[in-house]
Length: 360
Ligand SMILES: NC(=O)c1ccc[n+]([C@@H]2O[C@H](COP(=O)([O-])OP(=O)(O)OC[C@H]3O[C@@H](n4cnc5c(N)ncnc54)[C@H](O)[C@@H]3O)[C@@H](O)[C@H]2O)c1
Ligand SMILES: [Zn+2]
Image (cartoon, rainbow, N blue to C red; front, top):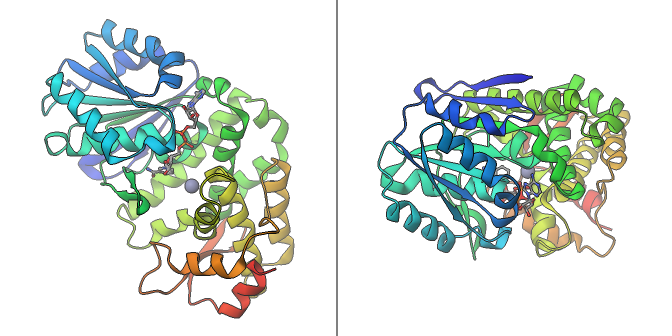
């Protein structure tokens, strides 16, 4: 099985190639681009320990000289300092303007390798090998790179499209269950914003999905990539449509900030955000209660949280929501479902109604 999705952006277009057990094929595929021989693999010790050797072998067999540059495992290392460390390794190994950086790992590694690759000599080639479900359906697609700053998450970054996304879904077998669910939350998001059929598959095939059935996971990854690719190719720099990908994220980010990034994983906070945004839409008379209920049910069926913790301060949350970096001129912007598969960008939500949803 090898499926292909293309992010259509003219000469910056990028293929996403999705298969199972395909890691050892990366060398041959990368060799077709004609990059310079030295390739830097950016990873962390966890992922590199599992898959580094296979990727290195494959690239070396195809005629590349590989070196690895590792960043400690964790979101707390996704910063400028560790990007500088990656850049130092790229310089020491004399990568040139036709060289390629390979990001092997989840979204943290993808964002950092992408950032380093985008500023090294004003931008060199990048290949993503995403190994978490979230990275396979979300962060490896669309060209956003970034690192965190003490003053805010993902505040330093660039747009830099990869040349190739090489997705091997068999790598998900070693992924901790809670991390898998974060990817599921993003797939639920794609269903709600764009595809009722995909949403239906999530409802009906729960067991096969959680057992990592190759065909079903292959379908979910492909369909999610198609949806993100379609949105990104219409609005790469988020001046309009791309904002729909933030469904569940406005409230989700506020929940993550309020809980100090320690209580919830990103996908868990987004799951809460999607349920609350659905209730908000219901409250505004834009969504039938049965649809809001379906969203909540599917979130709960995967064991993801659907409600705010009881001790959360609603006013604090609202003030965080209004400070969201995507709010323009202080106006709160929500992505609200009108039906399963259809959302609208809604500005100027009445504070009283919002309080009813998030207040206790
Ligand atoms: N660029 C974008 O468009 C975009 C979109 C969404 C999220 N992001 C970013 O992505 C990051 C989150 O990514 P993530 O959820 O993949 O987290 P992550 O990269 O931290 O990976 C989660 C954990 O799983 C481990 N891991 C990865 N693959 C594994 C495997 N196959 N087997 C066993 N363990 C494995 C990692 O070492 C890590 O401990 C955040 O920093 C977020 O800002 C970026
Ligand atoms: Zn997300």
